Image (cartoon, one colour):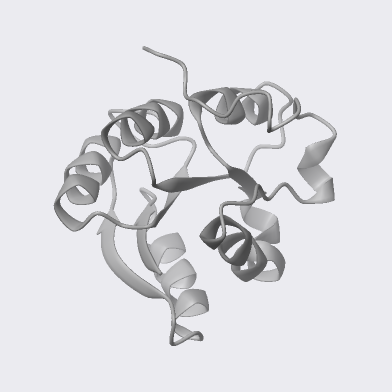
Amino acid sequence: MRILIADHHDIIRRGVCRLLEARVDLHVVAEASTGREALALALETRPDIAIVDYHLPDLSGRDVTVALRKALPNIEVLIYTMHNRDEVMPDAVQAGAKGLLLKADAERHLLAAIDALSVHRPYFPGTVSGALPDPNVHTKPQQS
């Protein structure tokens, strides 16, 4: 699996990379610190999965997700956030994300989320799933 990581905090990107490096079948092909950089790198590297922070500078994670799903329809997007606010969860799904993960849960759930998305299954751990609409209802991103 080819993976792009987009987060404006270097330390978080490095931590996610470290978790992924534990698996020989996972390859980080790009790292971005802004939304626009994430889009450009995704178009250049064509990852299978994008791990996108919901709160990116210059283009939100929601907007990045919509643009990625439009430009690369087969890409799977995992939104991750440090905020467990009810409006973030359904917004991510409506944008076209197939998974959502709280940053606080990343160490426990990241590899399971990647495995689910790699076979095109949604991944919403129990800590966030109560706030989400049915992920099968919103399978196409909204037009922006």
